Image (tube, rainbow, N blue to C red; front, side, top):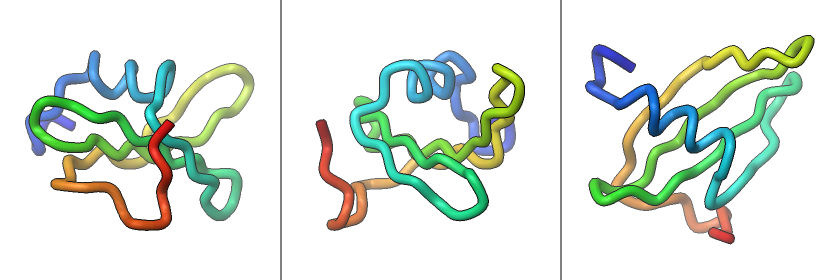
Length: 69
């Protein structure tokens, strides 16, 4: 997140209140959050009530198969 200059608060917000959710492989979750800069995609896993962030990247638009809430 630091390398890509993504605010950790936005990553937390994407997990707590996503605009779209997609299930990934091996128990991973992909969530999308619409921001003023585009779309934040966060991939994470949840284990024992803890969230482990795998990636957080900014995108210009979500993929076509993702339906925003």
